[in-house]
Length: 135
Length: 135
Length: 135
Length: 135
Image (cartoon, rainbow over all chains, first blue to last red; front, side, top):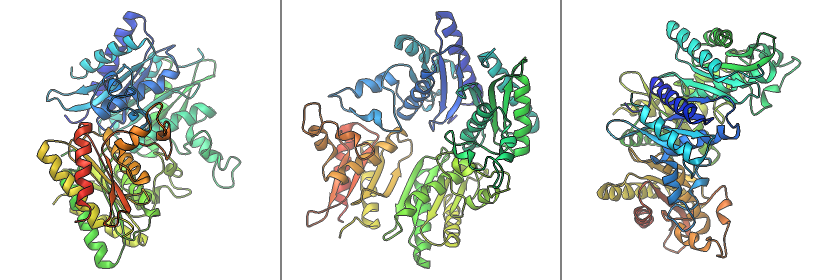
């Protein structure tokens, strides 16, 4: 499988929504395919509107570089090797909440981005989403 | 209810996906709220990638003006009263496939956009989606 | 094969360049993958600079909709079903010179765009390129 | 010669691709002319998609200022003379992987950008590319 499928993308969103509900988070949840194009999205009721765009950029960032957004963020701090990379690709996100979606062979087949709660919660929720992608 | 809720948006997507599968259409399906901001989205497997953007613009167009996109399109032909309006709001769509989502009191609470098949199919599918929003 | 490979993309460019040289055309030649992201590019010496952007948009248009650009163009004339679609996806091209690249199973694996000569020449050259993709 | 020619640009890409293959790097390789406009490009199979844009920006940065990107980067750190310059010209890159292409008389005739591996590898590969430009 080269790209996440619609069923997998809906499984990601359902898993993140369920966990977010449990912890009281109101999340924007975005899934992109390996080409960084939107595959599925859900904005939970009363989720922050400004986090809509952030969630999609997190998913794109993770898929584009095959890294969790916080990992790319460490590499892009002042003085670090990739300082300034966040201005490429139309604007990347350097804090947690985006995770690559990887298939059984280790290939990146997409990315999930979660935004609307604390960075710690968003990071945890994106990992929950990535883990749910493969059933 | 001022805005379509997450459950309603997912019902719209499920209804359009089911009908699209029945008729062999591969659809991009977008739902926006009354603020014309994305609420839910699904790209069916093998749906045209170029229709992703079109589906979101159809949903936005319908929500922004409270009209089906083909109705706005009639008003925006050369010589008609709203000629040129399609260049506003970041770019509107003037052909069928976008429908406003209306609550029991007649207020616009969102819009649905479907793209990827013929204009006739997309128009029918968007009407199916709008009808599914209120359970 | 889900996406055109680097060897295939270079074969497309070599075939277009060879034919362009034969007919005295100076071409910009762009190849994108199925996600409409650039895979390979060459600007022949003295090719029109303004055609650089056009060639990439032609390749993207063809890959995004799985159609030759002139075919999409027919559907997007005033009064035709898709009038106005050219303003989507960041700007599409509606005249000839873009062709989808299709694999042996008929799936779109990319697109080629050629720009710099007459529309007739560009259209012919893009067909030459698409035919060269699969060896 | 005022600008790198198509043959030279293809020689740059072939040299970088060969060296990248030897060291196991998966590279996006971009060549621009002295006007900082794209001349040639190749995305190797499985190269990071997010590095596509980075490679082109590296090539542009190097051609625009006649400097390796890491050299400009030193001048643009907080407190250094050119701090903030990276937001000009549509977005520059301040880390290694972009190198100017210079002719026998020392004039800048283009730039090469390589992205997808470590900064160290990308920097080495861009130097390999710049050296290959003049045959």
